[in-house]
Length: 111
Image (cartoon, rainbow, N blue to C red; front, side, top):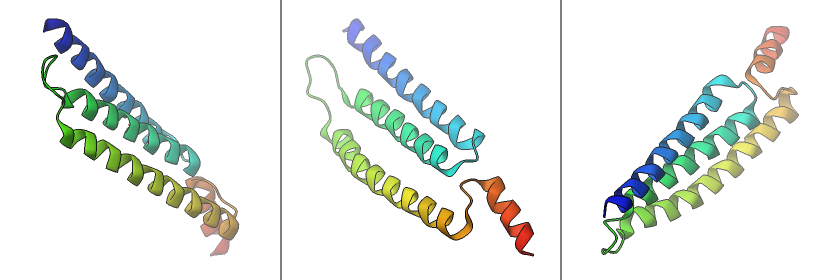
């Protein structure tokens, strides 16, 4: 029983760590594709933490609700990634910028 608690704790901490790495990438980088990848990394960490917390113990069955939430979250994550990448392509075709600094420079030139 003690080993199971340690394993679930390890996976939970790993999921939170992966989420924090993605959050750092979302804040630190200006490039929109890097921000999209960082959001995917954040989602992966969240999914890992949810699955790790779904287990009730070595003799019990895992809770199906977090597993269903993770499956739904994966579908939403793929859809959001496709939407964001489409928006990045559209933004690049309209402005020629792929990051925040490029958008600000383009706006200042157009004034």
